[in-house]
Amino acid sequence: MPPITLYFLGASRSIRPAWLLEELGLDYELKGAEREGQKAPQWMKDEVGGLGKFPVLKDGDVFITESGNITEYLCDKYDKEHRLVPALGDPKRYSVLQWVHAAEATFMTHSLAVLYARWSQKDGDVAKTEAGIAVNVQKDLAFFQAEIGKSKGKFLFGENLTAADIMIEFSLDFILARELGVKAQDWPKVKEYIQACQSTASWQKAQKKTGHKL
Ligand SMILES: N[C@@H](CCC(=O)N[C@@H](CS)C(=O)NCC(=O)O)C(=O)O
Image (cartoon, protein in one colour):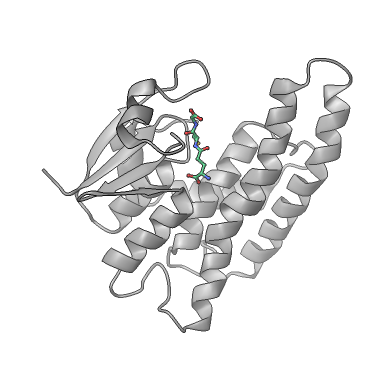
């Protein structure tokens, strides 16, 4: 049995650590499940404890939660050549980690606000609420398009994949797939970037192993 287990919830951020594990060439056991209603099944929550949100990584006896934290953990422990996150003290480290954090703290926060309004607003003008919240999502996507436009390759930091791509790809795919405040534009560069990420051998392997589909 490999020491690493990935608790994977279908159609979720769990694709990030699956992609990263494949990119690092690590062997791992997959414990996968689909949502029941809108929620992860109870057995997964019972097994991992905590907040009961996914993905969760188990390495030996240690449970790690939060996809960004799992990313930093796996890179610190297994990316000894600092291919995916530059070494401590290298100023480039913080440019990469900026995206690792922005993927959740900015892009997902802004876009989920749209989704939650859609789910929970029972009366009044939901479209108007969405349009108001969508401004932040559009600013995020415009910023991303500008930054990818400066890259000398197909990924955020050139031709080589980094942890920044492994975190932000899901946020962008989720925003476009669920149409969370994106209607003002077609976002061609965002689509091209998602395509480039999903064409990597490691993303393809992760998708095949997990069955990930948004
Ligand atoms: N910030 C957390 C978010 C975790 C999260 O909300 N996960 C969702 C799936 S993407 C989940 O477990 N939902 C099922 C539930 O709440 O029962 C991360 O990046 O890992």
